[in-house]
Image (cartoon, rainbow, N blue to C red; front, side, top):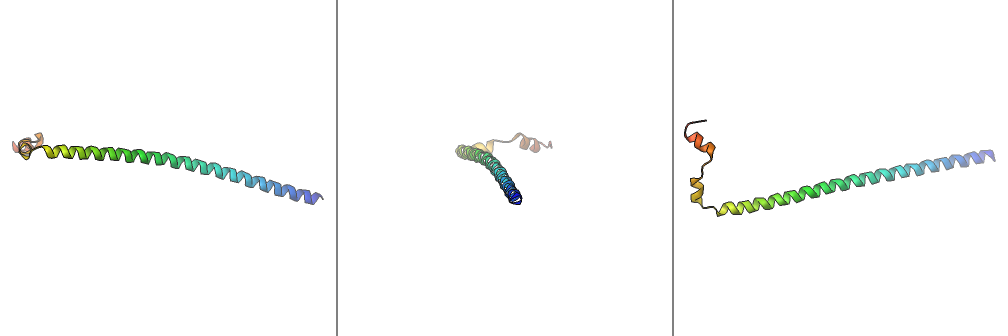
Length: 88
């Protein structure tokens, strides 16, 4: 009878150990899910910012196309004007 009781206790301890491991695994999985969700939010924000920048870029391109070529010929950058004068 004593041997049987020890065996039952041994199995009970093993079951409790397995329950603890499962609990730890669940906690770890929850932690990974939380981390993945945070990363997904970061990606969504980055994609939103990229979209906004692309839209701004397209708007600027449309505005630049409205400037007549004659105006572009008259526009000179300060660096370009300095080089034409002979100053590096």
